[in-house]
Image 1 (cartoon, rainbow, N blue to C red):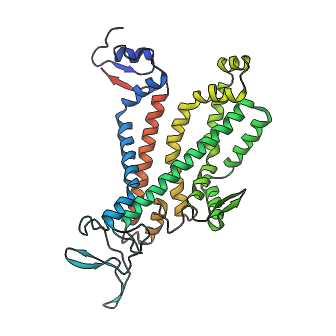
Image 2 (cartoon, rainbow, N blue to C red; image 1 turned 45 degrees about the horizontal axis):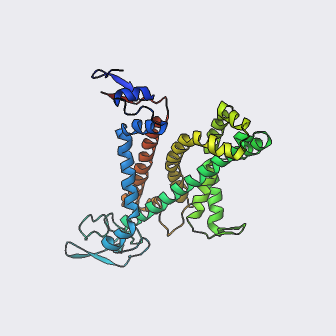
Image 3 (cartoon, rainbow, N blue to C red; image 1 turned 90 degrees about the vertical axis):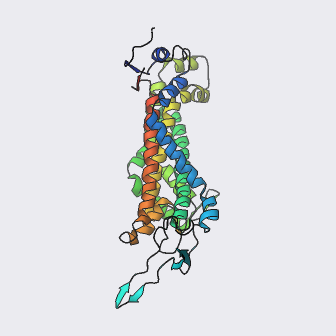
Length: 358
């Protein structure tokens, strides 16, 4: 095939079309390579992936920031402390009280940016804790919960769906009824019920001990309540793949069920699972924030973006940044994951229409 004329639009659906654009360089390449070719041309998706990486790195460096810049920990109270701002001693939390016949509330110091040598960059909360430090540590916890719960959810959902879709019969009936049990309750309400129960006494069953206040509690609760929402569509794909010729050929050759599931079915689910994993992380971060805001997720004094929003709601009028800062962090993180997830889905979908100009 000759070179395409300037301005001609092509889609990257097939190896033939990519070969024409790449001068034959990709002929004989795998579908994963073709997907990478599609994805790397989606500059918006890569830009938002970069944003997510920046957020992760910033949260990962929270201990370094706390030690070398803010010189305080995420849970250290400084209600009675003062800091030097422009050569003057300023209380971290104003004492308040009756001033000139008026009752003045106690207010934390506002954002100092670079006036206090890097301390209290985003101000302090009602307990005199550095908001910037707690924002980074809260981001670490929110990301750990979001990624960890997504990983557990994906693994359990794929395993159950493989068993249900391949074997069918009464096994499929039991697992699908298990999924229906989750669909009977709204995610947030079920999460609140489980999170509140476990937040009081922890979990001490089956030889497993998880103390109350551990971030393992919201991680397991969120992964548990979302299994059905991932497992249902994956089970549908397995039911379709189960009838394909390559599965029938493997059965005819005497392959064992587990080998067929791992070697034949699972590789064909890899692209869908990868997209699900990316998108479910964003969803889980939002769910964690909602549960923590309502007191059923991360428990104080441990910081998360949800608990930071809850802490700042009492000062939303006079100190709005206490809630705005974690809210903006959630929006940017979820937006970056969703945009990249959409780009990843378009790249892995052979019917994707990614336009390029040559």
